[in-house]
Image 1 (cartoon, rainbow, N blue to C red):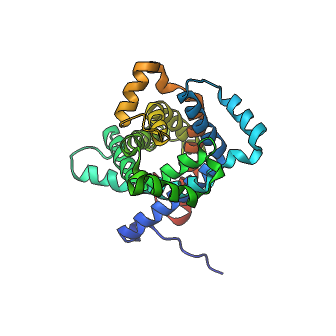
Image 2: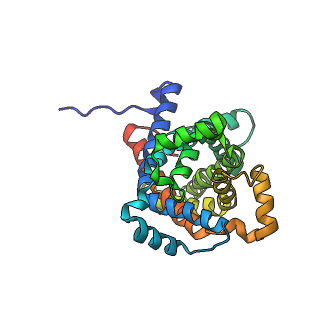
Image 3: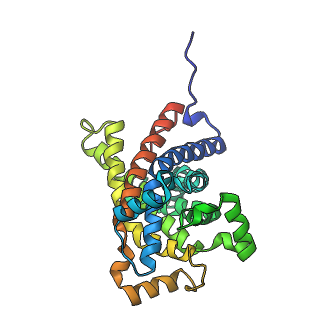
Length: 298
């Protein structure tokens, strides 16, 4: 029996290529989100408790959740996480190559320049966040303390009842900003790191798992450092049912005024312990899926 020919990127219609990349990116990130959901959930719980003036450790919150709510409580909100990754991450990672091509075409920059790669990540991340913000709001609500008592649809109905459609776009500005910074520092830095090691040390870093693992690990740390302050603001705004903050900027100002600059990095370990493995797993799967269907690597 003859082997089935795999589609080649250059032979695909641009729309089909984009849709395929978005689908593969969504799948890769959904698998990663399912695996890392416990760290993501504890991170959300940690931010909320710290917002009330407490500073429990990551492991302390995890232990209390398992003890008081059972082991499966650490998987609260996984359905919303998958919805978010299929939409938000599907767009931001799937559109990365399109933005990169667009930036090169609109300027005289080298396609391998740092500016192009970071700029493409910024643009695709902001687009994904703008479109998928409702899924992000639902995920944060489900993962908040006590949020698991209501299902995904119940939270959606409550948001509509309390705030209408605009409730799904609570925290939109910090979310868009955070997504741009995260994708730029994650996908952009991965692309930069991969191009650098493949160019300077091609013998030691051929296209494959080891290169993907090392470069995605670097990207996971870079995006954790870059996005943690905005992530703190985003989570607090999305959980601000009392109307304490007028906007994301107001939240940032209050954090700085009353808690100091280090408040933006409260729970950094919780942020890193989720973003690092999420980045590594999602990028490795995305690269593998691209290779399987005949798409060029990032």
